[in-house]
Length: 623
Image (cartoon, rainbow, N blue to C red; front, side, top):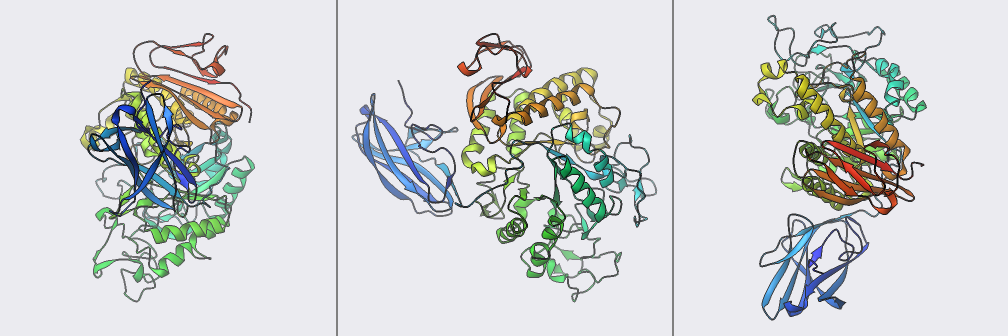
């Protein structure tokens, strides 16, 4: 048998796979062929951000067939590390370097494996493990009959719930993108809790609910008030209480990297009676912002002047958000179960440390989720390597790597890319973070999943073409088939699936604002909706999806298959996104299963997947 010198995902080479807890001992093994005539082998190790390479001599530990084994043990402090191997021989000096996957090859050059080491006391909540998240853009979900008080007069209230969100200025310039409101509210969400529960959901993530003067509400005007069009504080209390009675928790969107210029704190247009930072340097909020030429030149989020950036490390601001009586804890005391941090990768480390302390001081089982679009363990932002998932900042992150890989696969990419993406993330991330990854395939920041799957067109950002685009009947049918495959994968990978409101109903649309239309009550695609309900029932009914092991089974071309397993519960998942029939020999524990819980049924020990088909087989569906 031929062995690779090293494989970071194989227990022959590592006695523990993936990220390590601080102080945990790891044994590494290297296999080198007898013909290499090895003298000595070394582990090369360096702490991220340093050039110093520490070498550890590996000891000869025996023979496996024609290969000599060398091994060593390491014990590391919290941090990010990189490692490779070096050996000397009759033929000179060589390295064992990482390839594009987990495998190592003999090389003249170094390429390093990553080793994440997290705090030994890192813990994350259990209540979301095995659950399902439902993301709601509050203005566009459901409108109750409750009369609202104190709604600003400069808002355009749309009375036609079927109207497409506005993307232009109206002739009188009173209506524009971001200024059209449909009136969805907190009471409306409460009225639809039975519907949400029918999807198997146990967590609702709400896009911003605080007072703000755009419908997206990412330009916060007052962190202490619920936006009047959504209701009031009592409405949030009621929603939290009624949701919890159904086993559903609420998490809020925290937007702290910037505020709105039209806010209590900046007050550029004098809407508020208080003295804002724009109006006076003596304002209590002046130190919150970064003026370069007072008052009209200041740092703003991505150069958008209506979104002045905050100085998060300013003591006044950080205390206002994270202090004992701060914003985070105020809303958590109301029963809210956690926060999703907008653009978490733009928040400084010191501020994130304070946020975690505030959130966890109100309850260790509160959830702290961050928006990070890349691998959160090795991301560099603002010139420094970030520490999001080492145990002192976030619990977990929005999982864009999985999202992109799933969509690419169902649209034709080789399944090995998807499998490698999943294994990269599970190898780099602490298991505490993996179990709570927000596995989405659509959010308020992306085009609707059916639109992404049904066409390759983006029209280059041409709003007119995007606004008028609707999938043809043929495109729609194919997109629905692909959506089912994508959702099967999304619901069964490590982490927690998240559904953007309306994706389960067949909504279409390109990016903002077209992905943010009102939910089509009474006009849902019944086939898709029923599929999501069945997926939810399967997921919530099997312990295999509660931080269960992920075991690759097959990948290559248009087919992917894997096993999820925990204790006595196991699930076998296979998806064929190609145009040809594929046959899979089932693992022994799934042989002779008469029916699949979803999709194609096996025939004894064989599973035959036709084009664009899938199978989910459970051997124990009891928690």
